[in-house]
Amino acid sequence: MENNNFDHLIPEISKYLTEKFLNKLSCYPELMGDIDTSALLNMSVGIFISSLIHVLDAIKQNTEGEEKLIKNIDLAKSSIIKAIEDLPFIMKVEFVK
Image (tube, rainbow, N blue to C red; front, side, top):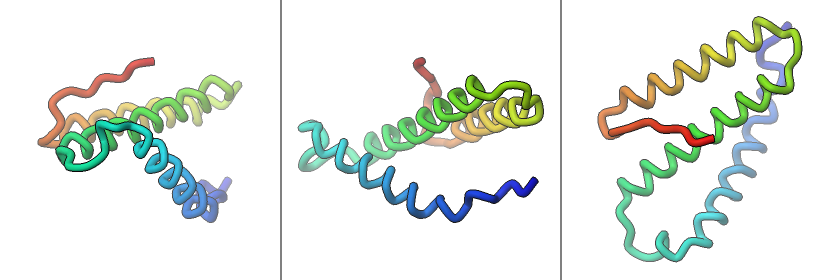
C-alpha cells in the first residue's frame, strides 16, 4: 500500500483549515490590535498539536483490526508530544480531552 495516496489533498485542506482558523481567531476581542506574539505562537502551536492529536484519536477509535495503523498512530502521537516538549519556548504540554 502506498502511504502517500492522499498527499494531493494536503494543499487544499491545509488552506481551508488555515482560513477557518484565522477567521475563528478574528472572533476573539483579546486577539485584536497589539498582542503578545509569543503568546499567539504558543496558542497556535497548542491548537495545531491538540487538533492533530484529536484527529489521530478519532481515526484510532474508528479503526477496527488495523494493528499496524493503531501502533503507528500511538508512535506518531508520542513522537509529536516529545518533539513539542523539546522546544525551548514550551514550558508545559497538556492535553485536555
